Length: 491
Image (cartoon, rainbow, N blue to C red; front, side, top):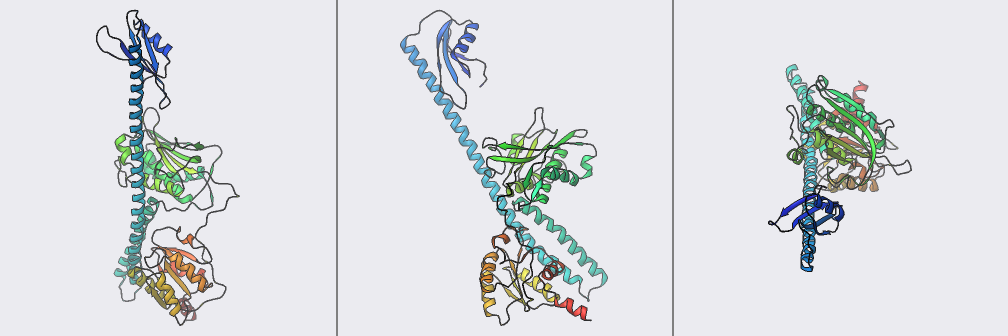
């Protein structure tokens, strides 16, 4: 495919020499062949394909005329050449499309797995954290047993960080309506990087003079940028330099053809944060696996950075672009759509807890399809002094409410349940009792589902795993003091 003339083949001595050239006219090809000692012949251009025009020519060393059959043969050969090139081009395009479809299906499958895994993990951690906390508060344990329970609590809270990473991987961050400065995000990301990575490597900043604004989750974007910067520093050899840059550009469909995750970002204006390293670059084999969790080419790598960054990009309607500067190295660019104008409607987010107009009395209704979660939530609430009733799904919660002699003061309900989703049940309960506070809880570390039930149907949101203090705090913000608090204050 060189632009220079390529003499393809001489069939036999004395036979015409076949030649073809890309993006060259017949006159250019004629001059090039004459310089090679050829005297006369005929040339036929082929139709444009992939932005390139080819010319097929047959030349001989001696002066001669080509008859009609020979010219017809050359014309047919030119058409056959074009047909062959078109088939190859179509096959390449088909293979590229199939690859992108497979990548998209893989990314979506991974996101579904991460959402489910985060939900299951946080439900289990809810039980571990709650039981360890309650055990530590027991008066029958000695000091050593309490210390061990406290250690279990701390470990469970640390394990909750894995749930957060799974939520990032699943693309569950909420962009929100807050304007975020990408220069501030890049600077905050650099501050999160372990100092060990900067001991023998330099990090250069090339931030845009005018900081582009995006609408997003600043904490999640900072995590994504930090992962890209850490990846760049780990790939850079000791004594080398990595670069952190920001900017804003327009990207069309061709620019986003190789973006990851596929089929998320659309043509438009994007702010970007870029990390460039001086490492060996990204080979084709690495490119196929670099977004797989736990895959890494670094000696001390964890294999989480790029998958998490791509998940956070997905949640913001953006993507990652992977390339490499001349001379080696790799370039990872995080794209985030530029914030819309102020006139646009802000995205709905999970509501802050709000108290009812009048103080309510009665039991607390705990709704969750997991028996273990209901049991530990009940134990926490009873320790705080509340009466508790239970339901194993949204439909059952409606039945319990209708059958109750005393309506519940608060409903604590899981977001995702097979027996009726929490947001749907919250709307139904609000239609029956507009003053009933409903708190949604989720093990997916995500408030997206909570926002599907518009206020005032939902009074607040709790992320699993939570402890008794978090539960008591959100109840107080609803104006409901734990009876245990009242008893302690009376004494």
